[in-house]
Image (cartoon, rainbow, N blue to C red; front, side, top):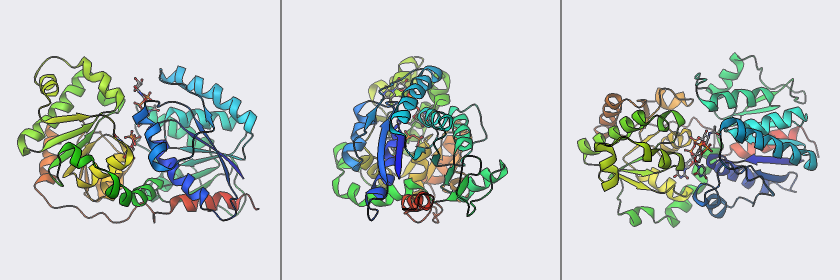
Amino acid sequence: MHLLTIIGARPQIIKAAAMSRAIAALHGRPIRETILHTGQHYDENMSQVFFDELGIPRPDIQLGVGSGGHGAQTARMLEGIEAALLKERPDVVLLYGDTNSTLAGAVAAAKLRIPVAHVEAGLRSFNKAMPEEVNRIVCDHCSTWLFCPTSTAVENLQREGFSLGTDQRPTADRPHVVLSGDVMYDNSMHFAGLAAARSTILADLGLGTGNYVLATVHRDNNTDDPARLNALLGALLDVYAEHSTEVVLPLHPRTRQRIKDLPPGPVSEALEQGRGIRIIPPAGFLDMIALERHARLVMTDSGGVQKEAYFFRVPCVILRPETEWVELVAHGQAILADADPVRIAEAARHFLNGTRPETPPLFGDGHAAEHICAELLRSFPQ
Ligand code: UD1
Ligand code: UDP
């Protein structure tokens, strides 16, 4: 079976590590993987670092589309992906998550009638103001296999009219919905030991277990309105002031640019002086896992970082109005606080003065990628 994997943004490159590992471990090598990198993310620390440290094969095809508006960026991807699919003629196109690279891959493959396998299918924020919500809905409805990380995702698809897998060979009109578990959980379990052995980031930054808060901010609705970004970063500074716990912020390039537009005032002054919030460049995955594992609290608007906090039993304040990962909130490990300074302060107080929440296993058995390979191979008897 010839599988063409499309990646482009940081979280997809990381997720691809789990699938490439599972494909390489299959007896008799029944799957041949071709990797296409759209180039949506291109900085060394947003792309190359993950290939170097996670053992992902080098991309066979690099489109190098770079940044741009949604229309221009997606259009460049569509054109490049279509040409690559016509040349490669894979049996299956594998897509991850909900970025513009996912959207372009889904539309290009569906129009060429190449079956799509969507990893992280069924997630919904029920907020179409998020570009990701549009991308994931389109991708799900173009897919032949919908690999769901959680049972909530399966239920979301059922509500949209998808039925669960049957014994018939799946097609785009008769798709299979499969509860596979989460490849990110696979990765966190797989790389945790390596991160403990290799990462020196805590020592490099002079941090100790439980004496800092880890934060990430990159969602467009948090970064692109200077007043909102100012309020959000101000709320992180308040957490530092109230709890004397430094906030470590590996900064996404989108946010790095937007910080330049902050209004003059206490927040921009504190950032300039490095007071309360320690800005560091985007971290490699092993360093990121180490930072997550040893943090006293995680505060984030990232989908992946929310879950990794859960995997490592670290409480999390979600800097968004809603989440696709509703089970984190239901189990009391995460609190939704949006960019509201009052809610952020209350949520931080709740966790910093309390005990560590329980985190029952909700994201599969750590072998989601193997289950996905097995399901795909069932449709391609050798
Ligand atoms: C994208 C995804 C988002 C995902 C995130 C993961 C979409 C619509 N959004 O958001 O779902 O959570 O990736 O990190 O696909 N930039 C650089 N260097 C890079 C990459 C980006 O400087 O290597 C800057 C550029 O100014 C660019 C901006 O960041 O315009 C935003 O990048 P883009 O890929 O468009 O969206 P993200 O915010 O990264
Ligand atoms: N991540 C990383 N370095 C960082 C920030 C995030 O390696 O500085 C990893 C994180 O551990 C997770 C993934 O990137 O595996 C999440 O990606 P991101 O937050 O960019 O996007 P999202 O998950 O919100 O789509």
